[in-house]
Amino acid sequence: MTQGQDDLVEYGFRRVIITITAVLCALLEIVDTTIVNVALTNMRGSLGATLTDVAWVITAYAIANVIIIPMTSWLSQQFGRRNYFAVSIVIFTVASFLCGNATNIWELVAFRFIQGLGGGALLVTAQTIITESYPVAKRGMAQAIYGMGVIVGPTLGPPLGGYLVDNFSWPYIFYINIPLGIIATLLTLSFVRSPKYGEKLKSNQVDWIGIVLLASFIGSLQFVLEHGQQDDWFNNGLIVTLSTISFFGLILFIWRQMTYKYPIVNLSVLKDSNLRIGTIMSFILGFGLYGSTLIIPIYTQSVLGWTALDAGLLLIPGSITTAFMMPIVGRMIQKGIPQTYMVAAGFLTFFIFTIMMYNVMTPDTGVEHMYWPLILRGVGLGLLFVPITTMSLSTLSGKGIGEGAAFTGMMRQLGGSFGIAIITTFITRFSQKHRVDLVAHLDGSKFEIQQRIQQLQTGFMSKGFSANEALKKAYQAIDFSVMKQSTVLAYMDIFLYLGILFLCCIPIILLVKPGKSKVNPADAMH
Image 1 (spheres, rainbow, N blue to C red):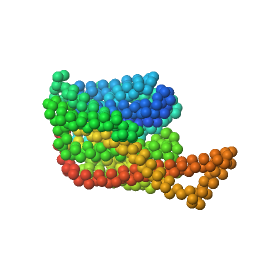
Image 2: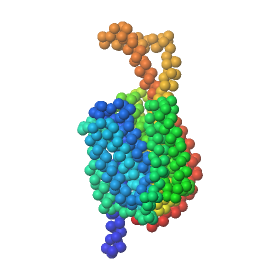
Image 3: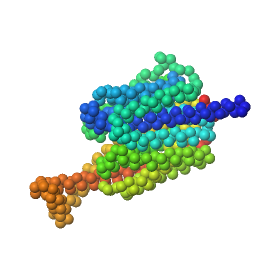
Image 4: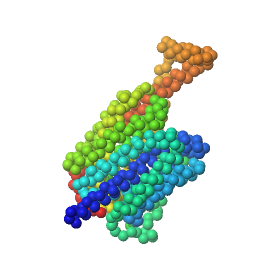
């Protein structure tokens, strides 16, 4: 081999290691977002916490996560991308150890917040590192590889968490991060390089006011989204106060970033029209990805009575389908197939998935009814994630890539938060509405109703209950049946409205400009 060939082989090997490291870190962060959901009951019991207290384990992580994401590009510039990435992994790993060793609920909440600060940085920085490590022609494939981790991650969390909790104990959902974090840190320090994007800012140039405004705006918004439903939204004083803080925090933050010489978030990057459209698409993708990932396990557990592990396993085939789609979509992008076609096909596929789910939902739905709709969901996610991401970053160069990735990452997370908050709110409200409608048609004078009550009463009396007790239990059974049916109808409504949302997104794609990649290959090959 010549010296040049040796250098190419070495560069190719380093790029593979960088890709593995970045995907591993993205997967760690995303799995940790959902893995705690199935362990909350065990945490509540062992730490003596209330349901409201233990919800903070999720909220604290999400707030820290969303606060840090818009600042990742600025922090990377300050400390160097490799150093910042490595420190983020260390923070995440150490915080995971501390979470597993927490002795009370508020210790766990504090350590989860710290873990979220490290985790939020991992997600966006990993995406930027992969994008910059590949030449322009191969970025579609690079984003496809990264997308496997991002989309498969939320699905792996619940079954992995269920297995660890059932066979070990809840601290192990955090301990599992430690060996992976150590490996990722060593690989990062050995192989990742930092691009040179100008000089660091001096300490007196750091926009501390902007940091406080950003934290106030996003932190308050995230709390409102997480706790609005259980706290009765705007009938609660704290929710009203935090909504006001979030609104004015956003206005002041935008004003500060537009007027300050050294902003922490470069809003001017949003002048790129493809990035603007990409952030909207990322928001809707997050809405659909996290919203449907939440709604299906809740439906299978609360309505169908499945275990947490079974509910998580249901999502695995769809995730495998997505992983299978990723390299195919990457090759399609490389061959010049317009990304707009793939995004349109992805939203249309998602619409078909929601309609199929709408039609199969009953109080007795089985795995065989949901299998193919979820496979279709996997295809839709594969068609959406990579084209949206590459389209968003395609006309950016230099540090604009990192800033653009931060916006798309933040909007995907916020879309997930909005999706979860809106879906949980409407499930409750639609359930109440359908319950009222069903009870209105439950006429006790009808022969069929009287016959059903008598059958239930006879059944309970055969088990040793007195006539009055059996009659009371018969009415309770009918009430439970009405509640279950009204909940199923609420889930059907949610899927129908999600489908309409995805269908309405297709015309937005017409606004995307034809792909003229302005990215200088030299900027990509650090």
